Image (cartoon, rainbow, N blue to C red):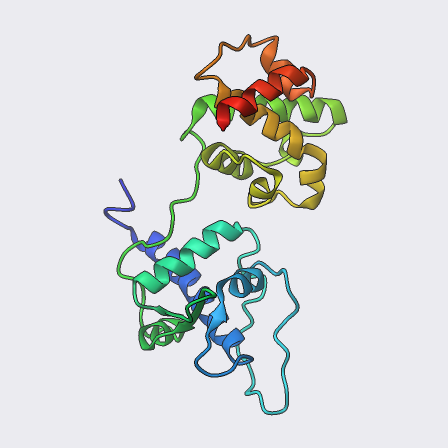
Length: 237
């Protein structure tokens, strides 16, 4: 069944819960900004991913029944930012300001946050799934096995299938892009980031140059063959 066309109750319940978190976070953060200014999208993203301190409370602040900080820590910043855009498109948030993208809850959004309304259809970006890009997933899985063998660790501890599927779906070109992958924090980025990008460079170039499975691909993944990597960058530009 295609859940985008015929969303099941479990899918809608999940997306409604995500929507409530984002609207509640926008409302919570809005308590600390001047009225009518809205909350910057980046601040909402960082808040729900747990990348900034909790909202400061004062004696004048009403008791808070929820705290959405870190509630979506396993979702990528890009996915959350797109979720905010979709909530605005559906009328649960309104865009505020011209220079900085900022949001404030609408009346419909407040009803949603209080549990008085739920989503009627799926609105969030479909998460990447294994099987969407089998060729690239296989290449990344081989790199993961190689890294695990080098370190004497289980393959899933290098990065899990959810992260692998995301990388294959989004095909990041830079370390900054790769940092958006769920579960790919600073330590993994420093340890494996460049080798993952080299594996992807092989994929980006495969349509324009013939790559030997035991030669060219291995050289890129292992960090050898500077001339080959340069030619790949030329193809991508």
